[in-house]
Length: 440
Image 1 (cartoon, helix red, strand yellow):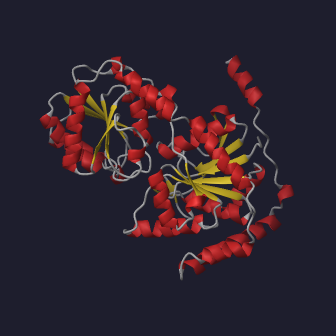
Image 2 (cartoon, helix red, strand yellow):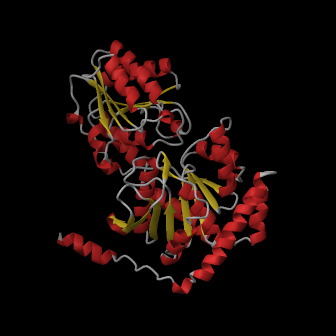
Image 3 (cartoon, rainbow, N blue to C red):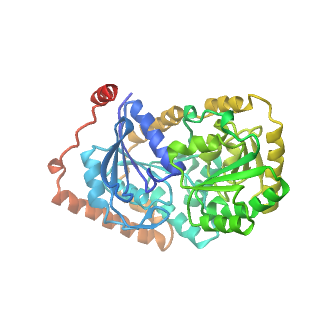
């Protein structure tokens, strides 16, 4: 097997919480176990800036950047080129892998990498529409980025169809590799539940896309119809104020517990307190949260949107349309099922999820994409411009201009800071790290 030097790039990484962050960390760890070198580039989070090493020697560059919305950095187009180029050369990167269409760093890193002649891969973790202004603009940006990327990865077949349509891609250049979990970190604990209540757990970013308005409408109705049901809601975001107002208005302080932001290490401890997991997302490409909940033995109630129907078998999940009445009815049925569950059902759920999802399998399939990409023939510069020009009558010319300016900036940077004057980063010694761990 040929070891590769891979750079993962995204605005979304730890200490932020979410599916993209989990995917980046766990996939990187498994790729390193397979003998590859992996570094991650993301923006600074508060005082976490500079270079950090995480468990197993995973190297992370936290670059200072201005955050504009939901952990996404301000677009700067060419301003990140100098520092990205320094990192790519210092770490001897051969493949740049960008994650998430909403990430500014992802798009800029792929543009700069192509100007340097590096191989690129893109993973899309979300679904977008075609009829709203933000969707149209982001789709055009995605078309620009993916016009010159070597391969794209989606986390579900629904996500693949969406991405192929949005970016007008050849379906043969897009692979489907799902997310996964570490099942050993989500072992059921039936003794953690309160037998006096049927507990519904919600763990989500509290934003519109996650269907928090549906949750706000459904909680009082379920509490009125099922007097022995309570809710534990974890997560933070702009919609938290709506949940607090709902709880005050309906006087549900003793039945609705708002945990706020939940650390990754505490997710399992929250999940095992519940009987049912509720997901009210309005759009979702995969949804790791319902897999984690099922691994902990919870019954899952979820809106039937995006790629969610592909994630779990019907015996583990009850679907509802993303409408208030549908969610309430599906949750009521789940409450009845929870009362009648047979002993050992939690362990059975955990065993099934463990067989279905593994990060080692995800890393192996991702590695196949890398090996295919690294051997791909590099197109001439004129072919790159031809691809950009095909993005639209006006947008095509603009994209060609952006690519040309970026290429010229790369030439200037190569003159100002030649490769042979950039110090190569020292490799991480796994043997020394493991020895120090044993001595602790």
